[in-house]
Amino acid sequence: MDATASQKVRKGRKFDQVLDGARTVFLRDGFDGASVDDIAREAGVSKATLYSYFPDKRLLFMEVAKAECRRQADEAEELINDTAPVDQVLRLAAERILAFILSDFGQRVFRICVAESDRFPGLGHEFYHSGPQLIRDRVAEYLHKSVARGVLKIDDVDLAAEQFLQLCKADLHERLIFGMADCCTPIDRKRVIEGAVHMFMRCYGT
Amino acid sequence: MDATASQKVRKGRKFDQVLDGARTVFLRDGFDGASVDDIAREAGVSKATLYSYFPDKRLLFMEVAKAECRRQADEAEELINDTAPVDQVLRLAAERILAFILSDFGQRVFRICVAESDRFPGLGHEFYHSGPQLIRDRVAEYLHKSVARGVLKIDDVDLAAEQFLQLCKADLHERLIFGMADCCTPIDRKRVIEGAVHMFMRCYGT
DNA sequence: CAAAAACTGAACTGATCGGTTCAAATTTGT
DNA sequence: ACAAATTTGAACCGATCAGTTCAGTTTTTG
Image 1 (spheres, rainbow over the protein chains, first blue to last red):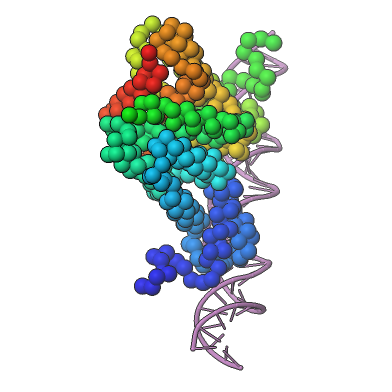
Image 2: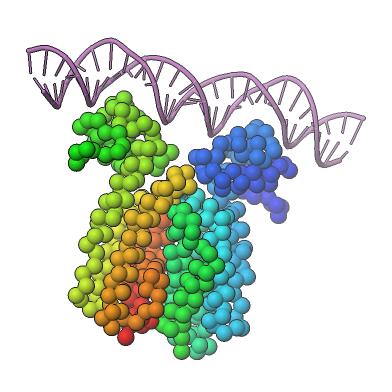
């Protein structure tokens, strides 16, 4: 078993091409909206080739989704550096999280995962685990350290982490998801982020 | 123009039957998953009759969604009574909101609205307006009164309302949407609600 | 009760789409 | 350069599905 091997099918050099094309089309059109012919065209590959890599549309979709989740997880790697004052760290974290969640890409991934997570058992789980949960654990870890350093006072650290993340989104995310175009000016973000940090510090600060 | 007239098509007596059947099937299978034949069968009506009421599947879907939004709005009517102590009112509101959001029905509506709100412009808008926004406005109104009575101290009442609602959900909603089956025990709810009320009162209480 | 309106059911159309097949062309490894 | 592996493109199959049509039945209405 060599390093590049995978338990899934993988033969030749156009594998990544196919995956990229599928990513583009699925993200643009959703699962039902995407036709396999479209994907093959977008990938610059014949349909026969596509089907030589992936046994069917569902599995191709799952593979794309899994790759996206990994991407998401990787991007979350470098989110927090501990040394600065708590409120500054929180502010920065809030900005980065919001930037991802509100991005066009983040929106599309979210939308498609919500839509398909009951038809594809495991998809929602995978997404949640490598997305929201990962972030939450990082934040909780940081809060834990801060409590140990005496700069925060928190009973239920996990709950506090969830609360902070929710406060960051306020309803900016919902507004965007439901197409309220007006909502996400920098001023709006600033207002929500400052509100979140202020509320959090007021409740848990020492 | 008599009281039962509507600007939309509406001829005979089986109108509501069709709408009910469509509601059932759309909610169960989503937009793409629902076949018109299924809907007609579920409604106990011939396909010809169905198409005599609604020009096409999309419009039928929109009509169902609109009706659901109105339902949702009506249920939110009797959410808050002002006389009790603030923390009790908030606790009660939180419980009712969570109960709806976490219900199987609430979940399905949410899922389908997220999934289709870019294909159906106006659907997301309508849902948001008659759902989340309505609730938020009610809460804000109550907070405003409470500030006037001197039992709360809030600068940005709208933001505070959003914050409270977010705190109520914590990530219970996300967990459920993404199929983490374990999450919504009464204990979990209690923990989140108490956390929300506590944090809110600590920050904005007098 | 008779005319008008609404409803039925079943067959049909046209289009889309997932997936297969295969002989010919291209690329790769040696 | 030659053989093995891979890719191609296009045709094709079977199924599903939105929407139509229509002759005949039921319900409403006046």
